[in-house]
Every structure is written in C-alpha cells, then in structure tokens.
Amino acid sequence: GMLIVPQTQAVNQAVQALKQVAPWLLLAMLLFSAACAFFYSRYLARPIVRLSGIAQNMAELDFGWQCQEQRRDEIGVLGRSLNHMAQQLSGALTELKQANDALRGEMEQERELERQRQEEENSQIVQAVRSLKLTPEELAAFFQNPANLTASGQVGPKSTNKSKEESAHED
Image 1: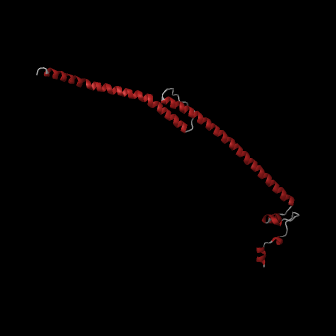
Image 2: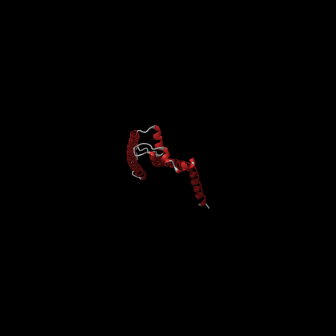
C-alpha cells in the first residue's frame, strides 16, 4: 500500500500543476491562433479584395489601373491575367469606338449626298414646271391628273378627261 500512495500524490501534484498551467497554455494558443489568422488574412484576403475591386473597375469599363501584385502564387497569376485582359479589352474598345466614329462619318456623308440629290431633283422639277409656263389653275389640274398634259405642254380641257363615273353622274 505504501508504493501506491506516493504515486497517487505524484499524479495529484501533476494534475494540480496542469490545472495551474492550462489557462496560460490555452491563452498562449489562442493568441498564437489570432496572430496566425491576422497575418493569413493580410496575406490572402487583402490581395483578393484588391483584385475584386479591379474586376469591378473592369466591369465599369475603367482600364486606367494596373494590378501591382508581384506574387508568384495563384493570386499573382490572377493579377497578371487581369492586367492582360484589361489591355486586350481596352484595345478592343478603342478599335470599336474608332469604327463607330468612321461609320457615323460615312452615315453623315450619305445623308448629305441624299439631301443634295433631293435638292437637285426638286430644282429639276421646279425648272421643268417653269418651262411649261402653266397657270396656277393648269398646274393644279396637272397634279390632279398628270395625263391631262398635252403634247404641246399645255393642260388639256377637263371635260375630255372625265372619268366614266363623272359622266354617269351628270346624266
């Protein structure tokens, strides 16, 4: 029985020592974990948040930035890929704007040519009507029925060109 008592006392002393050290050990582990989490978040989360902001700028067609990530891990690769994609998109957008401006210019030229053609046609019509030397009444009769114009350029009498319906109403 004597050997068991000193062993029990030794175990009890070890348990008492552990009870005194355990809270400090737990606090040290907690502080170490918090420090690891803080540095881990700074190392991983901040660059990801920056890359997310850059992607948002790209979504708003703002390419006036440069990702500064020089890391050799996946985050660095993603940053360099965003830089390359921004350069490609910026170039494509510039080309698209230039093509759009050129197309707009061509459309304006076409509109101007069409306006000039229309003015030319109108001028020719006015010249042709003036050369006929029609009175306003004859001109009105012509526009009502262009077939009334005789070979000599005069508007023929209305009675010769009455339709069958008009003749039927008079009877």
